[in-house]
Image 1 (tube, rainbow over the protein chains, first blue to last red):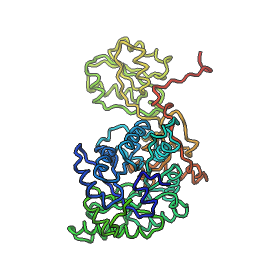
Image 2: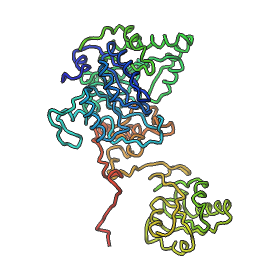
Image 3: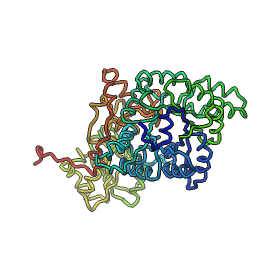
Image 4: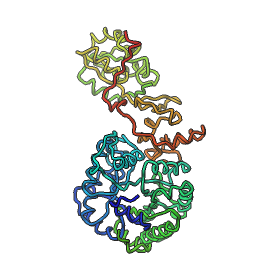
Length: 309
Length: 218
């Protein structure tokens, strides 16, 4: 299964419980923040996701950010959405990304542009995320562009290809079938939406297991530490996110200046619970605008030191 | 039908600023059905314009169809005496008038919004994306191109919750509806197939479209 090119893939293949973390590129052309975060995360995580104009806000490109991470010694996972590029641009950018040394790719539909800072933009959605996964896998094997034309044997991008899945979106019964579609399309790893509702996640994982999908794809559970009660409440209102009332009450019951600590404690507890769930092969920490906390969360979850690939 | 919506009066008045003799052309097809540019709306727009500009001379005519050259002749007499034509038809009608009257300025009074229908008075909903390659037989009669905010062919995305679309609480998630309908019909198997990338060359992406039918040509 492993083609030996992606460190992340090697670790998963060898059975390690992996840790990845999200890095949001800046809304400007300065790269020092990315380099700083790459330095911060490279020894405490096994891969660093570079978001692709997340929430449809213009940011430094994920591929360029990935190159900065690479230069800092990290293991970039670039995200690619279907919102802004057609199949021509996506394939072109991915050839470029591979040529620059990037080996991991996460394929997404992308947040609708109405959420972002250019709501009057036209969207693309020439492909959807399932079709994107399939196209990228076929660029490696059998080595063809989407139109069926061959890519030279020595010039094929062979990404370790991931997709997202949201166990908390609906219709719930269909989420596992959709995961199956992504796996059938060739997804090799999955990073899930942030998990707060553990019983529901466990139900979903049971269905994933019953469908035999945990044997076919590496599933990394999403962790999103909340800085405050307000932040957690905000997340509870984001479409597709589920935060149980009990968790909101727990956070609300903590005095304001201790809420960040509580958020970290919840994240650590969630990781510990996820490690007990069959088929969960790692965690993906999304500490948006709070990347500084990732080393501490990973350490307190007992996941240090990280293995060497 | 093609669903249209009248532009704000201020926009129409601004377009008319340098004219004194105007003809308003309505259409008896879609814009009549969607109450945007039929006989009633033409008369209303005339009155509103005259209230704001008593220096104007306004005549009106409601054509059988502005998207059909054979019905345009009825407007010729009005146009001869006017400085500009205000069309209350869809963008097709506006262009057909502009072609017929090359020396006369034509102003659109409505915005052409979408191909849709009305399920209750006062509400119109988009139903067709005019993609030129219908997939409704695969999706339970619910169009993902027009009704999914991202036109996903393998939806739903992760933003679907409670049957609503992430783009707005007032929008239903087309893929949730597709799922529920296929479930009722016992055809959830259709959702296990990865639908391939669409051939968008049959949509507007392939360039302006033209349809030739020899069997009905004269």
